[in-house]
Image 1 (cartoon, rainbow, N blue to C red):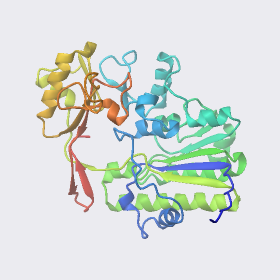
Image 2: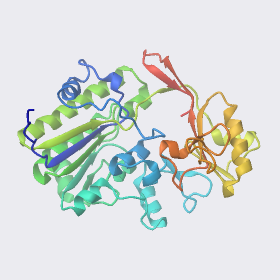
Image 3: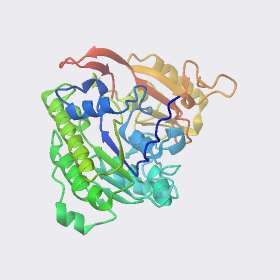
Image 4: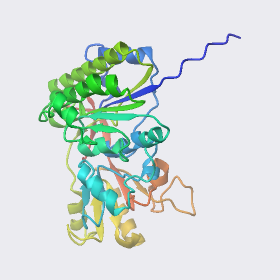
Length: 370
């Protein structure tokens, strides 16, 4: 038996998120740095996003290491009746998150972040981002360390603004804002702070894909730019001789959406919701909240969804009298099965139908709705 020497423990961890990046778009042509990095490291081939595969929900999962069942951030939009009685509010705006934090007695998330745990243990944390203000804030919602976003710096720092100026306006690809975040990271955060935990969340290729589509010229330009940013991080870490573990990941994949679905309007037309602004049924992302958890209305809406060709799997809270894989409404799966069984979840959660059909650029993966 050969005893291998124990590896030296890394004192620094960098988590880099390529928003909306798909693994099948990694190539020697467009992502040479990422490909080499993956080949020389460990690839988690069975990794997957939390469901629903939305940015801010997964931002909370990345920051806490937990499913929505534990952290309680249910989507890109959330129901907060104290702030908006009949519709969701966007978690992409960190001002909304601050307001939600107030009305929930500082329970924006219902568990601690990894950043908070690191800080409590005496470590340092920093975040550099070009993503939405909300997604950035969710990485360190208890504000244990520096958060740099294109719209704010927390805690406020005149020295960062003096050294780097203000972030540029958004563009496709979002090169200006991504470069700004990497500049702050490589020229200030890593050499000066040397954090034990660093988050780097860049908005591409997701931002560009939403505007130009998967496989477009702009999409490939955004991916090459992201690879250049990874190269800058790797070069900086090497020059600083930091013992560092680096994770490169994506919050979710990406598909081509075929048709919009106005679920609130559809439920009103079907007689299952009184009006678009009524509170008897409220639709937020793909969650549906039914007033007083009315079982009959829940079953009626489920049956309606099951008859719609655009609708995929449907989830409800599990039945106490049956296998916990299944929901209490006939033909549904359990919210618990997908890690969404939180008091803030809707009575119904549905997903859009999908296929492996290719888009105009030859990239597989389409979905209804969205």
